[in-house]
Image (tube, rainbow, N blue to C red; front, top):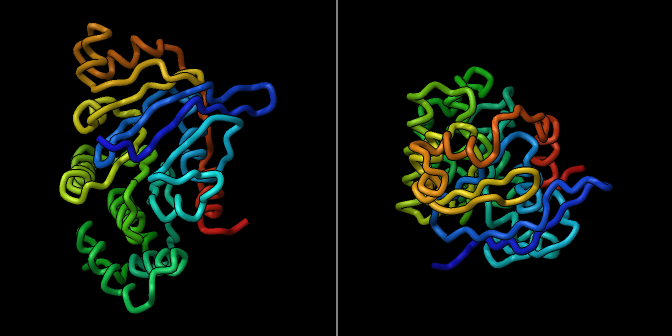
Length: 265
């Protein structure tokens, strides 16, 4: 099967600290791929390099056949992204948040309304299009962010902790949308999560990164078999240990990343 994301011998150093240490992996087109690891393991640094907001020290990356360093525009057109922390403008309505995104991504004005209506209906928010985002629940905000990420019709959807802090019903609702996108529209989903049961349930394949290195990759069932455990959470702990890690990135960093994607400083 075609690999839509290819990473080969990727390295990112910050001074003498190696955040990503010669990692290689591939993601099959149309698959749901879980990128798992403790806090500070290198997940966010890798995603930043994949999404053009951070240049690698060395190694090669291909995203939809493009190089994130030399072909940033083509790569950015290829993906949508939902950050862990909220990035909506609370003073804008649901419609206005998507309209702003449409303008930033150069969607022709004659297409904007129909496309916004399509994706707000897709996430069951068309009836709330005139409501301010600040009045939405956490789950509604996540659904709106997913609609925004899909508005320019990407081939890859990056999700950084998409269901963090949401109740089980809302989490299941969001994963229903994500599975539908993968199964029916062949969108590749690349996600991180600390909810191991989610990754166990929805991921076609997972890679576990720890201390900057890929330490395991395969289907959830293969990792459980490898570690002789009954759940992916137990397999994850067996692979990475039980120590508590520091956070790797702040919410401010994520807002800066979004600004970079939109061409702001």
